[in-house]
Image 1 (cartoon, rainbow, N blue to C red):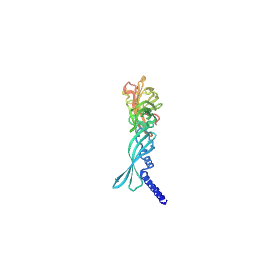
Image 2: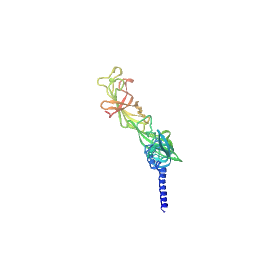
Image 3: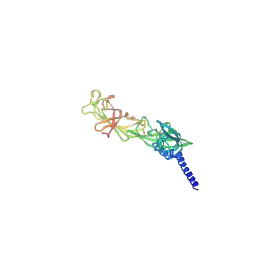
Image 4: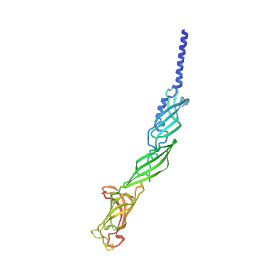
Length: 366
């Protein structure tokens, strides 16, 4: 009886020892699922994704699905030392607000002989990857999210929207952007459309060039008066004349209207070269000019030609500039030439006609 009991005890002990060695060899010696999950969560695959972020806004990635599929251990020599390398095959799902990626890959772990802890050597290879967009693009250019016109004007995106279309697994996006381009003399709202196609390996790619579908410009000159003082003709000795131009209607850039005033009184000391060109005469003329503004959206300047045909008066602007004014600093000005048939000399001569060319500045800028 005692011999039979002792035999059963030895058998039970042997089975227990065998089970310990079996569990140690099959599970305890390999990388655990928990360790792999933790290492993948902090790897570049989970934190940065596996696809280009062009045309989308920044959004943090997360590891949303995971499985350890298989692993194999091999012996290697590292600087003459014996080590073990565990090749771990895994499946994972990572995503953010823009994309969801399902992938498989191989991660390597290693440890020297005698060590108990596996060291993570990183994801060595992505064996398959499929990415699906969750929403359309976030901007019209890869890095800034904005598009540009005529170089790099200063503009602000005021509205942006995009679609996401799934055509049997082929994804497209149509983006519509409104941007404000602000100049001291005008603000333009430009509407632009751009088509995109999605590639599971390279991300969003633009299709063709962006198309401007609408432009609306509002000029800031309404109600403002621009003024310039200078001799009315070619002789500085004739004293200054005052030229004013006030913008009254800018709703239609093809039919801009403004009023003008030209005021001149002869110098108290007498007229210069009176014997040759006659005495100077007072000139006080007002009227209305109209014409068209020429402006390319985003440009730094504009031009116009405004006429009072009845009185042969023309105000021509060739562009804008800046000038330094004592006590004020730099002010914006309009470069304007004025031609008239008004005479400020009592003898008929082209030299006696009122005309001027210079920098007209806003009358309030004193």
